[in-house]
Image 1: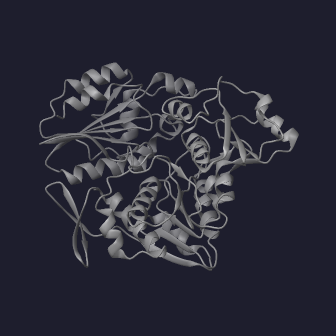
Image 2: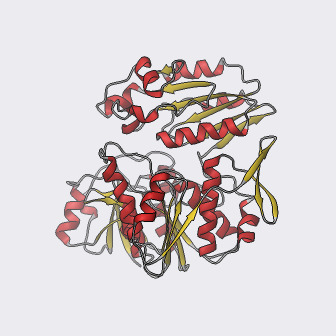
Image 3: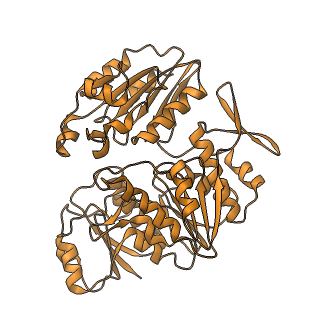
Length: 451
């Protein structure tokens, strides 16, 4: 039985990988200095929750087949140092995923936005069509217990993140997967603290595209100007396959794909999702499925968690939650809801939570991104800004940055909650966007307003 130890086992992807290895029959141990829900309960149920928080070099021994190193760990981590002394193989999770999938056809879905949704669409279709596959995806999706699946399947579909690999490796994660098929959905500046130079950020995707092998495929969104420019310039021996949004129409809040076989009703909406669907279709065709099979299966796809997820609904209004935090995601999501329900008022609430979004120098990138909303609200947690050693921006600064003179700012989640509870949601949609949780704001009571 192979044995692996996780340094920083509590992370979203890390604990899912740990659970996947337990499911595969491996012996798994781990450490972390903090573990939150749902990671804690899931690790405990699997019998691999660390007894104590912290780092314990005595857990590292020569009987281990490898160490899996999380991004949360520091370079001077005592367990990491012990592993180096003993000469135990050390893997970042992308390196480990590649190690487990060398003999598979590897599909990597990359881009500043859309990659989780596209990956989820592909996984849904493959599962519905009863195709064997492994996967790595950055969100919990319906029908899958884990965010990682490892088996003897001939295919693996990987959500390829451009963020740093590990404390020991500053390269982007997606470089390590050595794709056979790569899809790039879009390029829009993100991770401002790690990639302060946009040219450097763009070059990451160019490097990925250039890795496409002679018998491989590069699938790219030609409606994204930067992606199109780079994809058309790079020299590869493999195939280049452009895509653009699928034709569709909206009727009474329902989207219908317009195909050669007639109209197909789907549960998603928004131009960005019509692009995502098109990219997912191109990948599935490259994997041997027909367009008919794709359209057959995609009708039952409801979306990934926190991606235009409908939390509650009434006759004349819906409550949506979305992970949107970067400017391009924020704009696409807001415009999608307004376009789908033009007759309804749209109240959009955005939590600025990441380093980039809380940084005054990055703020101009948010100009006009909330214009589609009838009412625009920003929430910022002063504690989050202080932790990142950033100055908390005031309402006037945000109004100039977003180019919206009526924008409202809240810095107290209780006051935001009270404000939202007092609103009249007749003929109105409420859209909550954040990669955080509004400082644990009570969403349950807000949901009651939409029942």
